[in-house]
Image 1 (spheres, rainbow, N blue to C red):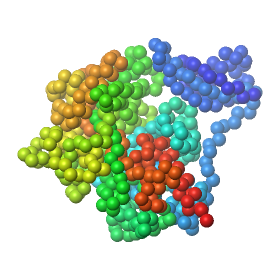
Image 2: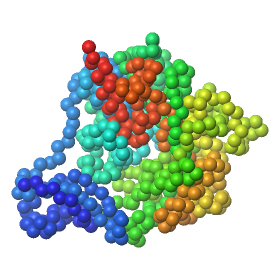
Image 3: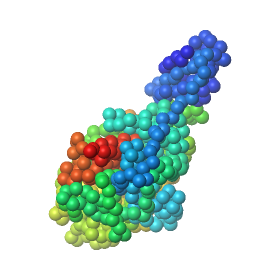
Image 4: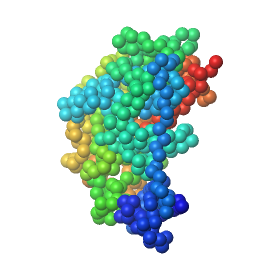
Length: 550
């Protein structure tokens, strides 16, 4: 028989199927030899009491041939001669849209501005070691999108928007560990994602899909309010029955392109702040209520939220045993993000710590789209060598781009305040709360280096005030969180897109341009790998249905 069980066991028991089988046999009063296998359905950590436990939902095979978990891998068609659909961007939304289109019998043509993974690695190495920013190949742009080198967290709350199990199964079919199918907060790891991304590309091309790297879209081809294809920066045109825009939250040139072509876009709320980092051992001791974590527990994580002056202050993309990475996409700006390897075995724990920014008029900088390198947010009386003061910026930029320019201004300001050499401005947590510049900074994982500043010279006043209030509240909730060992590194600003590309709720097409399908994080409809992948599939479903209509 196959018996379902819900167990609450110590970490050492949950660590292996062997020890779990011994526990189950003893609890059921049967010989362990009668247990032919255990299939884990769901697993999570319960750290509410002083003794940390693991909650495991299993199916126990008793005197029954054990059946290995069968990975669902769709039977894809060969679409090499089928009608083409253009996908702009090779992130999760684009890749999973391509899988779905192949199932419909349509040929995905993926246009990626950046490079394939193997070449992209070299540009990321040049960024971290030589401080050279390649605007087309970095942590955000290139094969797999930002997700490839940004940790691989697969947790999402968007359960009503698609088939999460299908997404996870496709990851496993291309090399991810099966544990992502049952862990409450599945995670792949930056060290493993590149191979998985490459394997997914191989599946798509083997079935007739196409990938074109170093192919930056500069214009949409629109005739009679119907999108017929795209024009590349090389001058080449690519035509198709539909265009799916899956460019990610950092492709500002796409928003400028749409604006130039009078295609409707909207300002969208996002969040802005810092990446905060502590020793992982400190977070373990707080969360697990112990001095040493032990070998059978994973590095501890946390999730924090607070309301301050009508603004949400919250942790974002928490990376146990992680690294703070440079995520800027242009020279002259500082952007940081975080990631963890699969083992999460680095000595630091980092998380975004951000404040919500609503879509209302804000102080705006000059510059932006017209400069190949973003200009500093200058106002009358400021020099190019000193950061401008907040407030008093000239207005006139279209409201749809207002939050994008605001985001850009903060990133450029961080570059200047940090010294202009890609070192990130930083401050001890305790000193930020006290309002003083840190005399020294604690060790941290940001490889390029940090510069001690008062972060109130980087962040707008209302963001600083809310962030300070939130940190005080978090220090009360997690005793020891507010400590001199904690460091805040600016800026965490690419939490989501500051622009939304609207679409019809029924057809998912742009309301003005038929055949144009805004998709994923860049269009404002997703917030992570899984939600972006599901949104890509939803848009591909609509494209497939529309293209197959008689």
